Length: 339
Image (cartoon, rainbow, N blue to C red; front, side, top):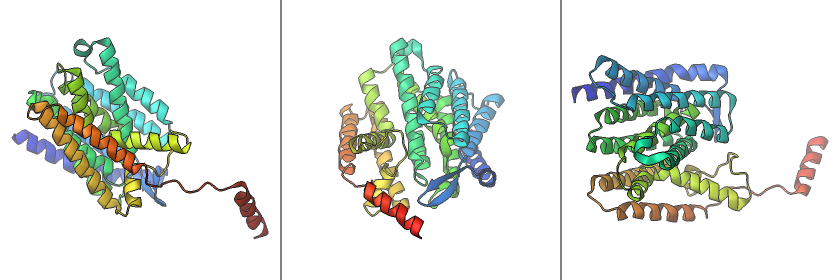
C-alpha cells in the first residue's frame, strides 16, 4: 500500500515535470498540433511514457513491486509503440501505418496459449484499434488523458480482482502519470499527448484489459472490453460513419469527433471533456461490475446499445461546412486577382 502511494505520487510529479520540459523543445522544433486556430505543442506523451516506464521498472528492479510474468514484456511493447508515435509526431505518418505497427506490437504480447492463434490475432487487432482510437481522442484538450485515467482505474480494478498485482500497479502508475500530465493538458491545453502518448496509453490499457479477461467466456469478455473503451470506440464509429455518409475520405482529419459535435451543441471545451469523462466512467463502472460478477452480462449489452444510440443521434449534428461550388471558386480567384 505504501509503495503504491509513493509510486503514484512519483509518477504524477515526474509526468508534470517532464511535460514542462518537453513543451519548449516541441515549440522550438515546430512540432505542433493545430486546434481551433491555435497551435498546441505535441510530443507531450513523452512525459507520460517516461514517468510510467521509469517508475514501473524501478519498482520491478528493486523488487519492491515486481511486474510479474508478461507485464514487463507488455510495457516494453508499449514503449515500442510510443517510439512509433514519436515518428508519427515528427513525420506525420498515415493512420494505416500506425495501425499496422501497433498490431505487430500487440501480436507479441497476446497470450496465444489462452486464446489460440485465431483468438490471439483477433485480440491483437482489437488492441491496435483501441490504441488508434485513443489517438483520435487527442483531438480535444484533456480528453484522451481524462478517459485514459478513468479506464486505467477500471482495468486496474479488474486486474486486482484477478490478483494480478504487477499489472494493477502498472495501471495505477499510468493513471497517476496521466493525471500529472493533465495539469498541462487541461483546456486551454499548453501541450498535447500527440501520437506518442495516446498510442502508448491506448495500447497499454487495451492489452492489460485483454489479459485480465484471460480464461473467461469470449462473448462476455467482448462486452466487458467494449464497455471499458466505450467512449474511444464510439468516437471511431461516429467518425467513420459520418465520413462515409458525407462521401469524405475516412482517414482524412476533420472536425467531426465527439467533442467537436458536443461543442456544436453549445458545450464549452471543458464541458465536452467532462461530459465524455462521465460517460467513460459509466461504461467503466459497468465493465468492472460485470467482470466482478455483481452485474450480469446484460449490463455490457446495455452500454453497447446506449453507445450506438448516442452515435446515431450525434450523426445528426452538422459538422461539415458547405463545399464551395465551381462558380464560387472562380469568383474568389477573380477577386484575389483584381484586388
